[in-house]
Amino acid sequence: MVTITVNLDKRKVKKDGTYPICFGIYHLGKSTTRSSKLYVSEKQWDDKKKTIKSIHPQAQMLNRMLIKQLADLQSSLLFAEDAKVQQYLNPIPIIKESVKPKLTVFGFTNSLIDELKIDGNIGNAWVYTSALNALQKFHPNEQLYFEDIDFQFLDKYNKHLVRSGVKHNTAFFYLRTLRAFYNKAIKHKIVDRNLYPFNDITLKAEKTKKRAIDKLLIKEIIALDLPERSSIWHVRNWFMLSFYLMGISFVDQALLTSSNIKKGRITYKRQKTGKLYDIKLVPQALTIIELYKKQPQGYILPIINRTTKNDEERLRLIKDRTRFANKYLKRMAELIETEETITTYTSRHSWATICKKLGFSIEIIAECLGHEYGNKTTAVYLDSFDQDVIDNANEKVANSVNS
Image 1 (tube, one colour):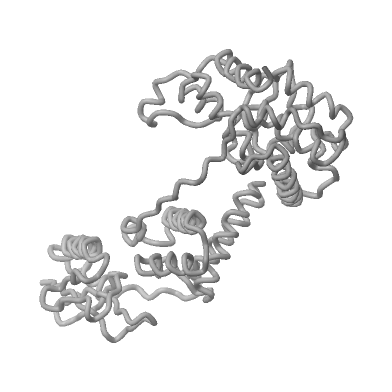
Image 2: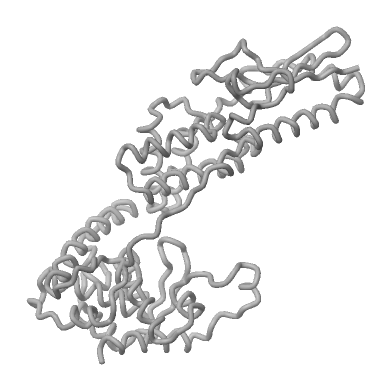
């Protein structure tokens, strides 16, 4: 008959002073050990009850995992035929040449970044790279495996970020991206789903300062007497065109070409989400576009003003031009004597806020901005609003700042 015991294997200690919890399997005078891949310190282990003590921050979850693993072993072996038990006691030797090297967190994530670049998702590749760089500052050792990431690791990492002067929402972003790495590793069968450590850590962003400005300030920006063809004049045009296009992002605006304009409408696919937008050009937007009829490189606006070799170089140039635009938007805020922060994001938030104040529903605004509304279960039963409704909302918003 098979006997299965649960023990803390004190022969194998990790750098953090924890030991693996192992299952001892005994049958007909032979024995073997099977790791649970759960690690605790000696003071966190109750050897009499064979459970993890409540002083461990994840005791409840880890004990559930331990019970499940023991139950699985028992169901497999207690009433199994002798040949199957012998497979546990005398496993077939693994030929070293056939074993793939275990992927580290850094190795796996760098491969994800390479794939994103190949697929042209440069923005997401940059997001992953910044999160990976932050993790590497906390854990410089490249030999970090997904099994090493537990509650204690995440708690220490979060505290490290805060003590390093990282803002709360930036720390939230780094931890959320690390969670995305872990989820992808589970799907690639690199780490066991049972080891998932994020259930016991709360990830929540803080509310940020509102990014919208009211229509009176938009009117003041329009009314500014700026030198024609000056840098600040161009930036105002870009800002207002973004506003008239329902808050199109700076990167999407920079990449617009004449091929995006058909029959008085602009259609484009958003870089960030891949969602397709179809927007009627209000007269105010057409007026700005007319100012840039003969733009080099085929772009509607002179944001990208030189030939770029690839997508990554193009996006780096747009990122630099975003900083340039924000510098002049800050000057505009000074000229209209407001303490509100104005950036390239402000046009999108302001459009939505003004639209709401004009009486349009949250559902209409969400559809205009390309967001889901309601919960996902009920949303599948709702038809999209007619294009006329979207066009009407944008016309009303545009006219409200030009009346």
